[in-house]
Amino acid sequence: MHEKILVVHDSLNITALAGRMLAEWQITVTATGRDGLKALAEASDWSAVLAATRLPDMEGVTFLAEAARISDAVPLLLAPDATLAAAVHAANSGSIFRVVPQSSPVEHIKAVIRDAVCQHQLIRGEHELRARVEALTTRDALTGCRTRAWLHDHLNRELRRCVRYSHYLSVILCDLDGLKDINELFGMEAGDQVLAGFSRTAERIVRRDIDVVSRWGEDEFLLMLPETTIRGAGRLAQRIQKKFAELDLRSEDDRPIPVAASYGIAGFAPETPDRNTSLAPLLLIAGRCLAQAKSAGGNQVLCCP
Image (cartoon, rainbow, N blue to C red; front, side):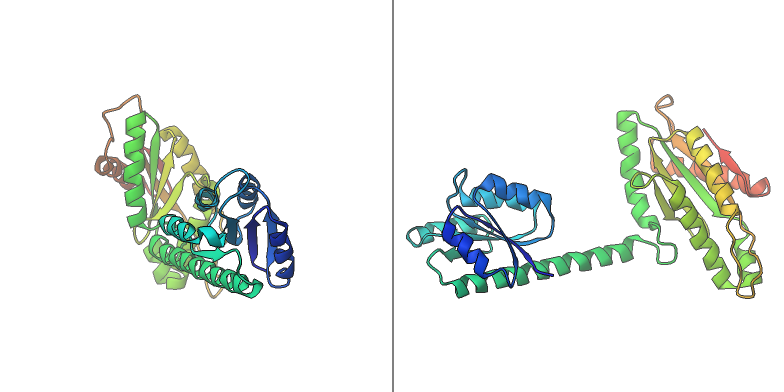
């Protein structure tokens, strides 16, 4: 797959130059800064952008500054020899990767673009590595859902937002019934199946990119539901309860593994603005509801307004 290079210049010589480099890269040429920005916005896989110091509609440095806001393409500035010193000064101020003299031979310009492509690959690799590290530290290894530490911070912020702007927020504290017995009867792998199965079930039912499912303890999960009343959270918990109970999980010797969970629900409501305004009392109420659900025999959904 060819790396994509954007050349922004209104000179026909640059267009001809681009044609000579097509075998190595996918070159796109635009004549104006406005067209260049449009091209960058329409795709996210640009490796480098080479712009003239003066474009028909804006300065090259201005264009590259705007380009940096919408693309991670490595910026290059093509400058006339007569204004090279000023272009280097402007490039240093604007974090431009390199300034290329306009009189440079084709091979020199190609070498600069190769360096920019390598720089982009290094940056992309660093971003991917950071994403993997973040996933390892913010996702539970077994279930794939968020960790307790991650949700604790985000729930604190979300609760403060809801209190400030009078929005609803609910939490569901879930405990898998009899997980210890399952581990003893069927083995630890069966218990892992149950944990992963609950996580998958909950993730499929909650609203993607809005609600959050987290591993809260050894056999506990906590769900954060922004903009959701306690009654709405109760209905969602009942859906999870039903779908979870329907899972067909089996041990290594093909014995069915019975699964169930208990649910305690609490939340902040604008009509009672003095209740559950901080994380500790909110989780305390949810924990008490969960304890009552467990005391009632388990496999219960209990809402505590």
